[in-house]
Length: 151
Image (cartoon, rainbow, N blue to C red; front, side, top):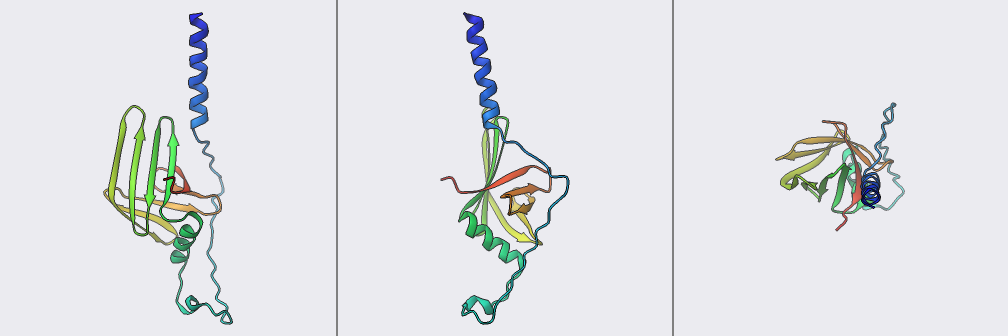
């Protein structure tokens, strides 16, 4: 009877770990995305006269697709990393079931040359893949999902 209970406990642990982990795939051929913005002078859009660069368009696309604030989230094993980004500020959270949690809130972010750059108490830059909804860390290659704020 004890062996049967131990077997089921081990089975639930394995299924729980597999169910909570994310599958990370790496495409051997890097994809590049170019932002092409064309303004039609016949449109009566008041913003058509304002100069728009690719970084501003990328930031606007993030806000349009994911709202404000939006998050970059990655889970691995028993740990979860999450960046919550508002208009100009960012917050980094790390949660681990054994090690505990910590937060870093004195962060800011910007988009520069097509990369999302976080600065402050924690510095990191990400390459964005808007089609896949992912941000890849330039520091360690970890892939974060871009999601709407879960709160």
